[in-house]
Length: 545
Image 1 (tube, rainbow, N blue to C red):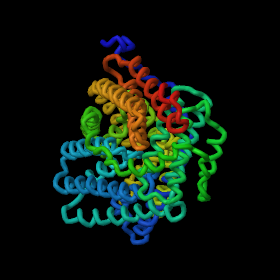
Image 2: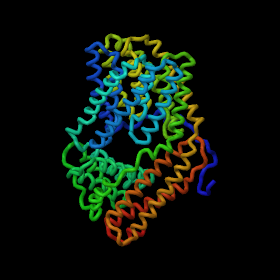
Image 3: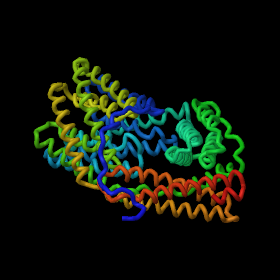
Image 4: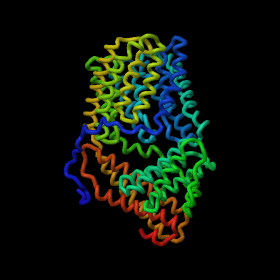
């Protein structure tokens, strides 16, 4: 064990305290909530009018793509949504073809588990964002157990593609009213985080501010062309970066006032005099031309999580088949929804999933008599639960699950009404089976790579800090070189904090080099601050930190 490692027990305690505590809602909770309603309603209401609500499962596959990419600038959102729709069609097509070739439950569960593992790895590697792999797994696993013929597959995929195209339009429509909305929100978050750091000076606040500034730059760099609005936003992010580097000289109230002024569609507030730090806005064009790292390079570290997902989903599905539950895909999806970046978060999600699903079946029992009045009533109830799920899930996963569960139960009744008691019993059994078996599988597949990943992240910060220090000391280094060095160091620090948080929550592994992590972070942030001060003050003192 390294002398810089802390802790003697490799086992992390899994707690219940705080798991169900409600947090603040997302700042844009209403965007996915309204988008999914707008994407789901027209296709489903059309099918009701045609008397073919049995086809709604296929249109739902495309419509649910509207849940993704709400934090992305619209230029990037167009590409991401298109890829989400293609990924949804690929998973759905694989499931439908498999269902048309066999009705063997073991084979179907195995295919569903492999699909869930692949979807988990791809969503994490590409950092697609919420709701992640769960929607893909829900659609594909449900489609596996729908009786199908090969001749029907093209038509069903066409329905999903048409609904997906409508979801793409819904996702892009806000650009007509607020074309720079995502960039404005990311910039405001950076300003708020920098103000909080300037007031508290707390290391955790500093890490959050560094992450927010880094995210804002990533959003702006992904936004395509640079009209006047985006150049003004870049200057505000530079101001947040300056406040991060020199918190004692920052004006927290001024930063917050500028963040508030970014609401709405009126003119972007002026950043004020930034000195030569304004060169960063020019340097952003240089960084925009730098190729982004390939997403598939992140697949290697995700192997343990993918293995957990495949094993847990398969065993949960097999267990559900063994006890005779008619819908083993519910157990499979429950297991797929559990797996997070470490065991602590996986445990939290397990508790949240069980509590939310059990409360959700009670809601379904209360709503079922109303929903069963007509096909239109079922669709309207599903729309209400769609909205409620997205409105509540950002406060805590279990609260959103209270709406997701009755919505999923109602979707099974699109083809024909079923016994509410039977649906409730099956859902409770599958939830418990999926949660228990899925979590045991997560315990069995340990992620010992997290410690190695942490050491690699520390080494990356140390290399980036040394490079930035050499650049600071070089009188011939121009603004572009200093900018590149600072961005590299900032990105490495953000990655180190995320990797350290993930490793700290793993259940069984060797002791972590916490002292080395802390030292690397402190030195890295000092050097990062020195680069900002040199750009803004032109003083030798700024290079000696």
